[in-house]
Amino acid sequence: MDAVVDQEISNREIELIIGNSKRNFSGITSTMLQVVSYQRHMIPLRVMGRNNLTDTNLAISFWQVVKMCQSPLSNGKFRIFHARRVDEMIQGIILKYLFRAKIKLVFSSAAQRKRARFTCWLTRRMDAVIAMCRASANYLDNPPSTIIYHGVNTDVYASSEDKQQTWQALDLLRSTQPKGKHGIAILGRVRKQKGVHLFVQSCIALLNDYPDYTAVIVGGVASKHEKFTQALRDNIAQAGLSDRIIFVGEQDFADIPKIFSSLSLVVALSENEGFGLTILEAMSSGAAVLASEAGAWPEVIRQGIDGYVVPVNDLAAVKDKMAMLLSDEAKLAQMGQSGRERVEQHYSVKREATELTHFLKTLV
Image 1 (tube, rainbow, N blue to C red):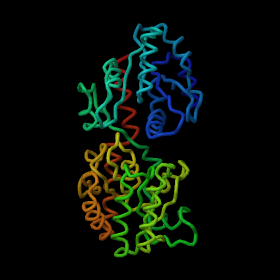
Image 2 (tube, rainbow, N blue to C red):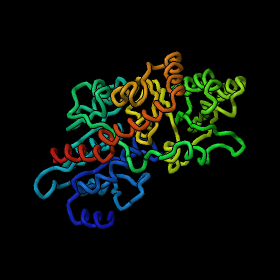
Image 3 (cartoon, rainbow, N blue to C red):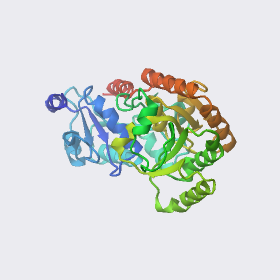
Image 4 (tube, rainbow, N blue to C red):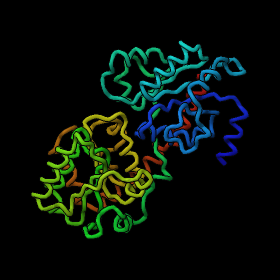
């Protein structure tokens, strides 16, 4: 099907060019690739850069864009260049103002922090700005052109019919380690900014009272965060919980959906986030969630229905809400089901791609 669609696109004019400047895989890359998997069927597009593309037929180089965009579309309208990163905005401005490319510039803004002056200058030169949520919109100098929430692939991030069985079958822990009946986890890079210490400290305080649960920390550790991580390992060992709170390291990206589907509770406690897809991926996978008031999480999670949102860096609140979640398995399962339904209705990547493409077409 994709080959047929690509052939059709090759015989039509490319209307959308998508920035893809980062070599290393990131959350932004993941978002772009998921959206493109649907968007490619909705609008003729190419991706500027081969980085992380599974289908390199979609790739186009900077110089190919320069050549193609010297003229507008046959109907006289300009193509769209969609940037998700600061350096992609720079690329777009170079194309438009240095090489006189006939393009309109669009920037998707997810960050929830005060922008540097240069970033603000770049943003003001966009023809349209898309905010990822209301919180990120509040950090823009001017109101965004529109707000389009991120989504996840609900077919990839799917709930298991029997989480306990899926958790037991998961090849994540050493075979000699007991798994307990249920898995709870925090996923992402292991560092203080991600609130990993809050998760570990809460598990140390609670897991002796809830023997059916095993906690895992899924994510890589950069060298500058090794001291922080070792201190957490030492605290876990001192509490006698080294077989119940386990660092499993960075996992293959292809295995992440399977891990999510096995979990009963996913915790995300960042100090700040751009959007924060982890929570959507967890909810889509049928897991209850416990998150800090960062990113779009307060807008996504219905308090007491899909899980709970707590203040940033509030250890007491994390412990309190985690205890409530672990003490009622039936409620925990119901929250996971409610979260799945919410994502299906409001936060699928298909919905995101559809809304985004509809908006972009208004600019062409």
